[in-house]
Image (cartoon, rainbow, N blue to C red; front, side):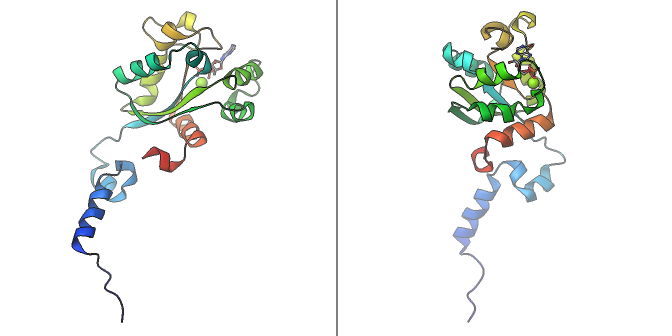
Length: 177
Ligand code: IDP
Ligand code: MG
């Protein structure tokens, strides 16, 4: 005889509660119901670079991100290899600074992060300031904390396409709930 296919009502309720608590973009039913009217917060990828970690500034940079309203979806302290840095910065492989940049990024521990807020990509770029700290606006993270053009404290994705590539390069889906 076939077993009944319905769950016990308590387990059914528990399952529904779990589904409802998933992030909106993972819950197809709710996304279709609410997605058109409710804005899903944007995600971006960021690194606290080895200079800032070595200078003891990781906590101060996390505090800036927190104050600016970014939610940390995932964070991992790691020492990456030169090979991993080359893959991550592949768009810059023809630039004269590529070798120096990938040496620097693999020179010591850094923090890999996925951040979330409305308008996260553009807002993080603004909070970071210009690539060269000498040109960065007052109050920006690079102005306050960067050592130089090459060793400039923080990375942030520059567009939705690069954010998607960079998040997937360092994090698996199960780390992003
Ligand atoms: P961004 O980090 O502001 O997006 P990009 O032009 O994408 O800047 O360059 C990536 C990283 O490469 C910079 O953050 C910096 O660490 C390094 N870099 C960029 N331009 C130079 C340069 O002219 N000399 C040395 N390093 C550079
Ligand atoms: Mg860039």
